[in-house]
Length: 80
Image (cartoon, rainbow, N blue to C red):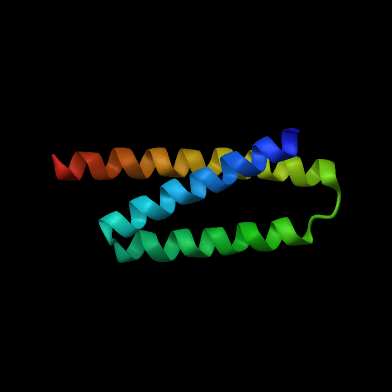
C-alpha cells in the first residue's frame, strides 16, 4: 500500500514539474529536470528490493516536490 501511494505521489509530482516546465518554456530548467528524471528512472529500475523501491519512491517524490516548490517560488517572483 505504501509503494502504491509513493508511486502515485511520484507520478503526480512528475506531472506537476513537467506541466510547469512546459508552461514556462525555460530551456535551462528543462534540461536539468530531464536529466534528474532520467537518473531517478534509472535508479528505480536498478533497485530490486520492494522495501527499498518504496523508500526510494517516497524520497524521490519528496525531492521532486521540493524542486517543484522552489521552481514555483522562483518563477512566481519573476512574473510579478
